[in-house]
Image 1 (spheres, one colour):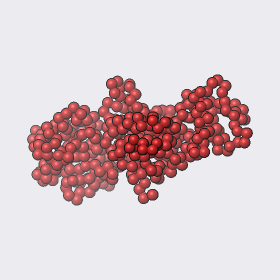
Image 2: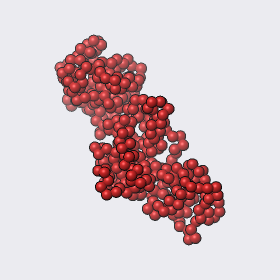
Image 3: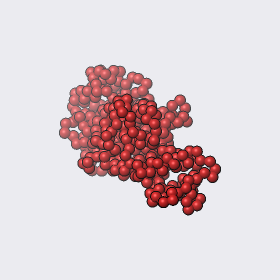
Length: 396
């Protein structure tokens, strides 16, 4: 049985269909969610005859639990009639009667779905479901009028497992030192326009600090700057050596924090307050590639929105010339790690230059997120919808 086939949901449409035939394609997440949500006692994985599909089928089989898993290869996933014939003969060869099977057809090609529907209709209406990621429901193409089955948040894993589902050969490791956002980061983010020059002073002190180097508080104290100094001292980033002088505390942490780590913590603090987002992580490291120990990239702030991965990369005070290559790097990585529906945003304090290479900058910070700091946002792919449409709901 599935892990979550319980509660008040009406499973009658699939309750007498113990064999779940599920397609795999570039997107593995819908197939895994089908395994987690739909009742079944046996799994048949439907894949194409290529290496990528073979690897995806292997990853899916590893997540099927203790139920028997078999594989059926579709010779031509771009021909609906061929898919229908392969399915008909293949299921018969496996001894799976069409009166015992249900299909999950989110992944794979459109002709594959059409071929599955043709066979299902021919057999008298085997259930055919797909994942509607927007509503987080498994909806039915067949039979007509069947009630959708909700995909509860318990079925969707946290970020590291979601990446493991999608990115074969890569693994995500949570940074154990990345705790809750610091008060100093929240203050710097909330009041950045007023503290920009002061932050530059702290950045230079952290980057070029010599033994004994310190900064002196103004003759006329600034209440806001004093709050930042004391908050940073509580985190060990600064050390008060006299009532009017401060020096760097733990040098490596202070350098990372004042050169941009504060922005990651600030963005995390805002994202954690958005109800639609969950499983927020900061400083997630991705390993894989040629060697399993190779660090491929790190994700500044990452979370789950519905069933999809959201990655926010943070760049504080970078030259615009450094921003553009970073956008291309993000574009190369985010779909590999999170799949076609993954979303990636760059959050930066850098102002775009006029006519910035066709890059589409969002006109405002994420509505509903209540960023006090005037950040600039850009999606890593022009085809990626603006997140403001996904996160605001009716809140405006």
